[in-house]
Amino acid sequence: MKLLVVDDSLMMREAIANAYQGSIFTEFETASNGLEAVQAFKCFQPEVVTLDITMPHMDGLAAMSEMLEMDSSASILIVSALADSHTAIQALKRGAHQFICKPFDTSDLKEALDDLIQDRKPQEQAASVVSERLKLKNTIAHSRVSLVEKPAKSALPRPSAHQYPSGFVSPPQFGKKFKHETDSTRKIKPFSSTYVQMHKLNH
Image (cartoon, rainbow, N blue to C red):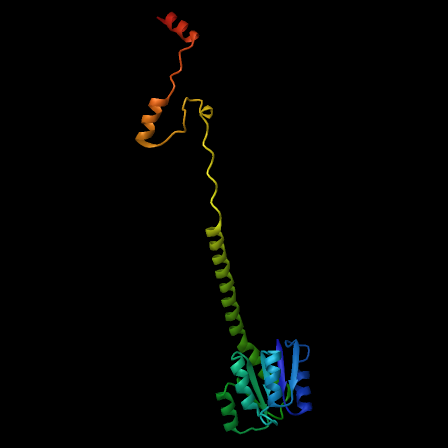
């Protein structure tokens, strides 16, 4: 999972990144202002962002709005020294998932990020299910196309007369026509001399 840390203070960026170094976040990126944050978000595509509000060039709330336009599923934690309730409410209304105030303990930061990660799990599981269903649907559709496009088997060669020891000159047909044709085309085999002699003896 990727984490983008946005703050105009180098000390704060390092503190946040070090708090989760080597844990669930496998990749980190940092930005020192709102403009850098938007560009980093576009290129880095993080799942989670920690975002300061008061920064040069573009504040955190404006940067957050642009980030969520690019990816509405991103989880954003506001980390700000502005502790008034109005700022926190505005941040949450604009799409932030949580808000913590500076200064903070490392345990507070971890707890807030853990909550964000837990909230993401149902979304990721749902996305995974949708992805698997799409794959299955595409596989079934591909199989159907293959069956439709499969060339028909060539007709079997017509058997010759000698392949029918019963006396049929042509392969048998079905129905009344079959009975008529077989009666007219069946060869009546002559009696053998042995059969004639035995017949005489019996009579």
